[in-house]
Length: 374
Image 1 (cartoon, rainbow, N blue to C red):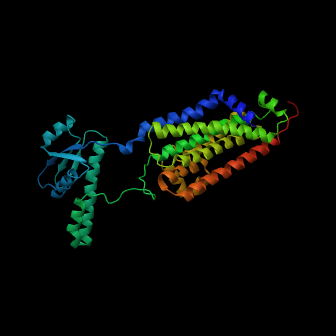
Image 2 (cartoon, one colour):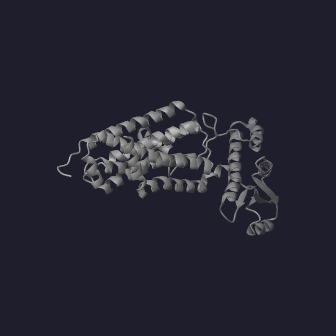
Image 3 (tube, rainbow, N blue to C red):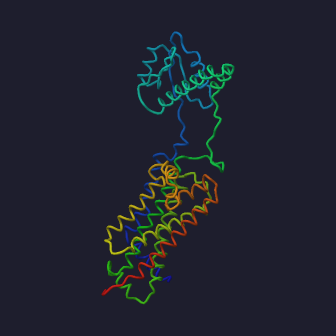
């Protein structure tokens, strides 16, 4: 058995497509993700400079509101009072990002679109929302007017978004968890190559192997183990690259993360062997099937859209229970964000059962294959 595994590994390592894409493509994609938004949550935004042009009958409450925003600890904006002509000149020279014209109704003037302008618009929108709230208080509960005004001016953050386990949620983490899940499922291409090497009607090597006295179960297991070892190695390299090279904030224990990757790689390889064992379909059709399955599963787990997994959970939760990519990414969430070990073990058990079913089905399909001549 060991010598079969050894030579299977040597054959696979000499196959450029088998070794290159399952390893390099996830690393390249993870690098692009990192430079696109990997550190966006740690970014420091510079204070936005804005001019204030005071008109007759200026909204005093808005001026008080700006003063509170400016003096807040986060130093979101920096204001300076100018005439309209001076403000327009500085806006044109990009010395300021916008102009608040404060009359009876405050307004914002900008000359470009970007993060500073969005911040200024958000400040104005926040004030308008508060003003609407005050009008509602006046109509429904006049005695609480001054308390409402003080509350609006005292801009404090009363809510902090944390997980049930007390860890801050990074909304972009889902992309990287789904990326690891995709890398696990990419083991299906390695498993597919193993299945092809066992079908005598496809390759000469498989024809020679089929006439040997070696039991088919031993052939299948040796192919799966060698394919799994290669796929698991690829995922470990990706995991170490994300954690120690890109310095992503994976707070979970490395042992548990490796266990998830172990079962994820196992089901990826098992899926490839199963599809490769199906019927008399052409090789190109089978490759299209495993590519479609792996990419659809990755998409539904949040690889392209970090809200997709939650959308599926709300509308078709059963899909998240059978989607291996969703199970893998959810298991990472359980140890890095949720701190929910019950859900973590449920995901692992589901992955293990699915792998056993796929391996058993593959054995039954390959065992029944017979040939009139080889």
